[in-house]
Length: 189
Ligand code: FNR
Image 1 (cartoon, protein in one colour):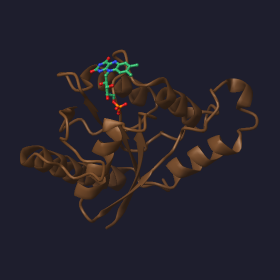
Image 2: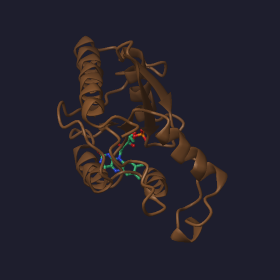
Image 3: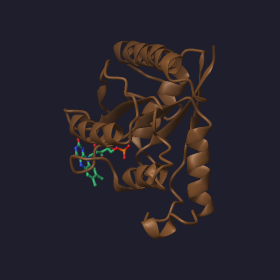
């Protein structure tokens, strides 16, 4: 069976290494997974003053999450946490109260940094947020990508064979995880 995955790229930078990582994951995903990006660049900064009437960008965000089986976060680490823009998008999607888009929605987290610990601290922080948002998370494999120059090309070509194999396996495991969660928690349940 096919499963749809919406992915967030945590960085808004033009030359984002996490965008390259996302391109690689799209390439290496098993054919059963259909990936599409969920953009968040145009969202205003969230406040609950909007709860009574969400703007179009925020409705589109919630619709995009509702329309997929699972969510993949591909994010850098900024100051030992996730970038503010990504947190803002998560806050939008988690509200209004009682309409949390992440509830029961399977997710996985991955990230690349130029530092040696490869976004580990940001991922821990994001996992806390997703736990609170009631998203069943893939716990293993973890994936902390230490990005060296040209590790991944802008089109998603991975130049190191062991890294390519690791990322391919990561997406295969994500497919298995999604299928398992959907067995227990079908989307229309
Ligand atoms: C960073 N960087 C960084 N790296 C890291 O490993 N841990 C960190 O806490 C931070 N903090 C941080 C803050 C800010 C504001 C910036 C701009 C950068 C470096 C970071 O890994 C590097 O810039 C990556 O290229 C960011 O990923 P994207 O945005 O290129 O996908």
